[in-house]
Image 1 (cartoon, rainbow, N blue to C red):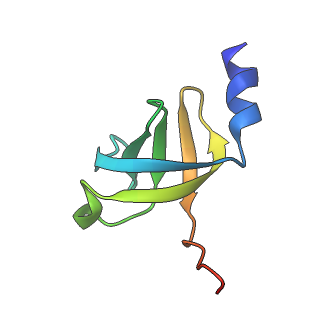
Image 2: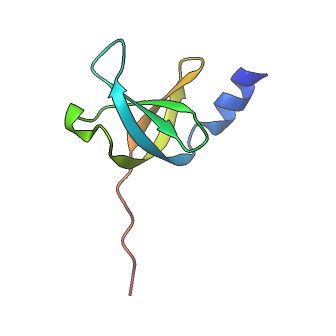
Image 3: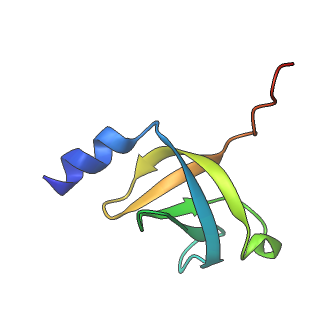
Length: 75
């Protein structure tokens, strides 16, 4: 049931706070406001920063995400 819910979230966009380096690989670990863990490819200097990410996959309890560019307002 959890896996089905996680698969349904793929493609959605969330704001994350980058917290720390991931235990494996060269990714950083961030969390959404609803406490979902997301692996993102950003530099260590981004710890403590917020990013908009699109969820691209899941490894079970953790998601992978891609940074999305902020949309500009059209005047």
